[in-house]
Amino acid sequence: ANPRIVEYLAGVERGGHHLNLGGGDSPAWCAAFIGWTESVAAQPNDGILPWRASVAECWTDADWAHRTRPKTWTPRVGDCAVCARAGGDPRRGGPGHIARVEVVPNEAGQYTTIGGNESDQVKRTDRNTADASLVGWIEVG
Image (tube, rainbow, N blue to C red; front, side, top):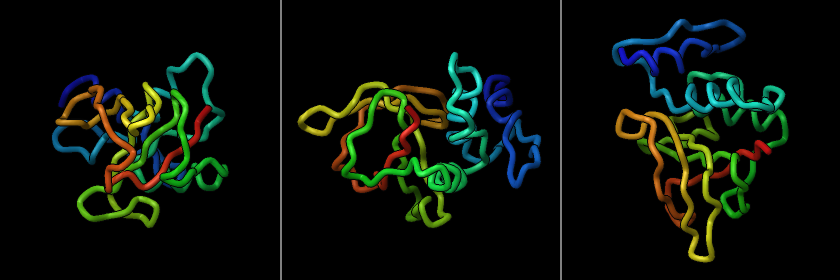
């Protein structure tokens, strides 16, 4: 019921229809947060990552736009890290997590992201490309 989370979820759609999500235990909102950040960006990405209800939908949209990248690819600031969650793989329709890259990976694979729904908040997280949950990247820039 956090007003900011309700705002992130306000534009979420599936199949071209707004879902009117918000309040209570709405679905994982990391994908909605990424879409919201695109909507408020000074130069939107022409719909590569519209508001979606799931990471799998984000991956499908990006794949259609030829913007998905393998785990071995090196992202830039603004691109998105895509991770599996709860044993599922979002590249195959399963649950996942998505976060925007703020600091690119260094020689040791360390990088920093900002994402929604991380411990039920928006926060920066230090990650590593060796993390088994990382399944790929979405090139936004």
